[in-house]
Image 1 (spheres, one colour):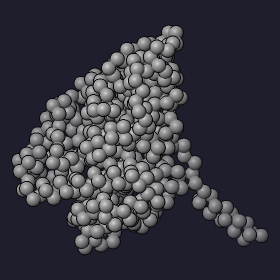
Image 2 (cartoon, helix red, strand yellow):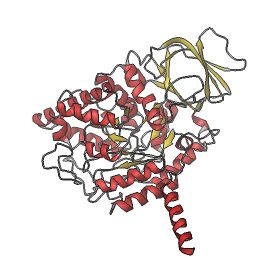
Image 3 (tube, helix red, strand yellow):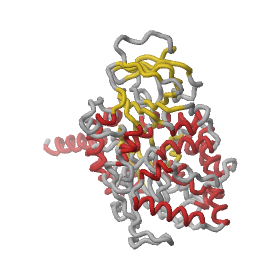
Image 4 (spheres, one colour):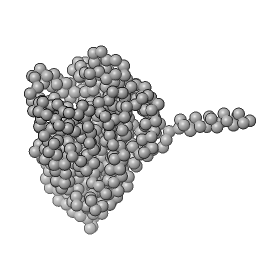
Length: 499
């Protein structure tokens, strides 16, 4: 009898261990809104129980034709009505004339970070004294820059200080800090030989599983695999995340895109730029020094290989995250940082940016031509992926040489999609509703519709006709509270790259 009871208890424990852990990811990312606290109220521009935005153009994020001269009613933090401008406004409403403005859904940034790569003692030749890149946290400046630009929801897409990110999210949710809603990604799931000294290097698949389980218990809501992870480690991480109702994305190299799709990954970062499946000498579970360039150079969008890969990804329901801003220096039409963006950088970060820009400008013509080919193939592959039914989301990857900053880069990501051939309305949808769909939040954010959370961007002009107008942000509504974009940016001038 005792043996039978032991067997029954063992079977029960096995069943319990295999059962999914219930995680309300949406509630974690979008908890009930808290009133702005002392540190947040200086940035509040428009507030009230009921707000009427009158004479505004509505670009709803679905790709539909804009609605001209409308009134958007916000009540208790949600969109209560979208009506003709002459319709009756509720009594006691705060009325704001938005003539000449457009309102869009808040940007859902799908490759955003809370850190910046520093280069101590970078010299004019691009050499630094520190062999391993350092990744300081931008706890103060990054959340403000994101919100100022219209990013109302962001995925951190890899963390080097996960406890910091979780605490920042908690502070924002409590109204103690200004910033977006946050999908906090756990620490990088990285294998051996990582170039980043701040990343843990997984020993085996069991440790990958335990790492996912631990950080899921701490409250992170997604995970990201990195360049040196092995297939066994990635599979263990994916299985544990899925068991808990969470998703895994990856900036891969050691694992190819077809391999990752077969393992069940949910998303792949950096478009098609880091797929190594056709790199010469690719060894299983090892990242080649070519890091995907030969595969992208040889994969025209109309080629049989490209069509087969895209079909594989679409059939497996693997999303792709476009991160065009971080690769824009490869574009023949590269646009340097604006003076406003440069002003946000700390003196050291600005100096590093100018050094690296100077070095890039001196690159041999053949190298520039090779990079331009990669850029052209990437743009066409992203369009082909969407045409085949794939879910494309967007983010800037604000790291590295300083050419991408939080918020500014999220706007630029949408603009570059238009350069790549999408219409402005298609690009806006990719940067808003598509991200919400991936996160499972499309019933609450991502488009302008009655009943949804009032996460909105007010810009001067008409981004549906001139996508560059998306940079003309005046007010950002998050949970129905309007924040002053200019004030947020001014508060961190000269600080990004410092803290």
